[in-house]
Length: 399
Image 1 (cartoon, rainbow, N blue to C red):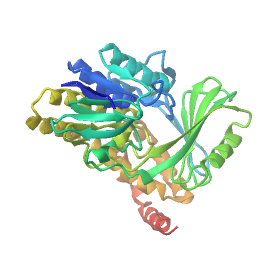
Image 2: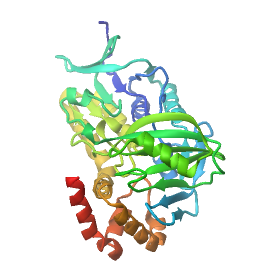
Image 3: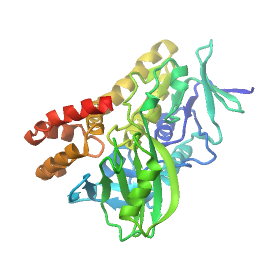
Image 4: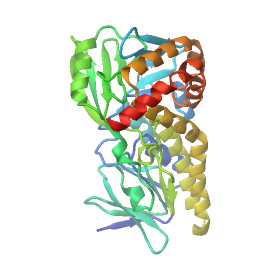
């Protein structure tokens, strides 16, 4: 098999948000960067719901563009298992709905314009280390590429971290998901809708995301039931006259980040490192920002003698955790508790949310949810629910 080598090249695997940001940042830092994408076209297929906060986009240095933005969002409607929906509306838009394929392509094009060499149809099958200190990856039915640093951003299910001597995420914590693109829906507003309860999405939730005046992206994830049956029932209940114009299957990773995201001349970022919010499965902002940090670290490490690289690579792991780990830890606790709740307890929980709605509207943050989780857990209404939550958790273990 042909081997292509470059003395100081950075090899990034995966041209999603995390990988393209890593490649872009490394190129901006003066490195020779190779970006390998397994699919013929960047961003395709897409499995993302496409809700991105404006604050998060700003963190990535991106302004909403007509090419990938479908709609602005100004809040959410929460549907408890029973009873009246709860609306949370902000004074200003807080998020945008994006076409994820076009968004990924936008970032990848920026990377290519900065000098990154993009290779589509390059499915990486193996990570290798060489006696001369170099590292490389083998492309299935293709060449082996050799360089100084490999950044794995190839997504959920990647085995490259394991080959590099790292722990992989707990892939048993993947929740099966299904999403429909609906057309001919009733007039859509500027609010996302979220649906809860054992008859809708046990252990997680369902969503409806407006993508146009009469179109919506509707989906759910659950490990406790047939997701297609649940989604069909939801569509029949709320959008009986709509048409299904597209179907996307996928999964939501809720295991929490791996313990270590670096090894000798190797970094892992994004879904491959489980840098994902356990409460929602979202990873665009965390993965994208961590990709920026990874690209910067990889570039600096490639310019450093071998004996000093480990400090730079380890610093990437510290930096992204300093930014996100506190929130991820609290989101992980919240998810584990939430997944075990009965419908009755969920209804009680939403009663508490109604009482503290003004405070939630003031402090809630789509990307950094730790503060609002901690605030609510200190409220008397929620503290009073803890015995009920404990009972539900024990029951869930045995059922």
